[in-house]
Image (cartoon, rainbow, N blue to C red; front, side, top):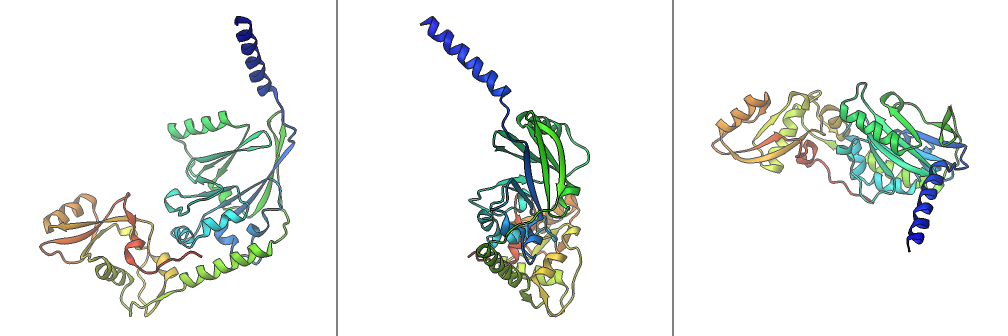
Length: 319
């Protein structure tokens, strides 16, 4: 019995030793970077339509301008549509990501990472959106280095780079060289039609018109809060409004470009005038509305809902 356990122990040691010395026959890993997926779907031939037949790893970014467009994409079902494209990694802001049942890795823009086994090579991507790292950031970086053979750190400058192919050359399980090149792809017409259909629905939503009738946009939106939510007081930071438009008609896209709809709020009921004044003074917030004896108040709250969601401007439907 002792002999049997001794043989088993020696076998485990040999197995562990071999695992460290094992060198996969991979000489090169190709990575296709699509840049902004929002911009990609507006191209005549989106790169997303040709990913499935391309070798290697495929990465895209959810960078949008304005920021809240990322949420609109999700509400319309874009992140589920990505399941059909063959993309492996998607970089974005977690608070703005609106997708369920996805088959790709989501990487947060701030020190987020993911690791994929590529033919025996542990390939990691880490997104770094800051110049100086905290102690916690350095711990994360060390952890990812420890768990991977190849680590690709994508910084905020690279996020803005155009679509390209990055070649990682492998030697002894490590990185020996990198090159960057263009690439060609064949369009999947079925997927192209699906993306065109989605793009049409997106453009239709963004071009939906509203009629402030020359009211300042701020007044128009706060009035909607009063009508839809029964809110008579809004406490808000000055940066909520980037600009105050005054037109007969305004589109949803113009609203998104004028208001930081990604800021979060919550509704507080039955607040007195004194309670409102205390909150305002403590947080240096601007005030809309005239307080009465008992007030329904919208206040900033990082754990609340998007400002946009209180407005009831549009009902999103996925297809």
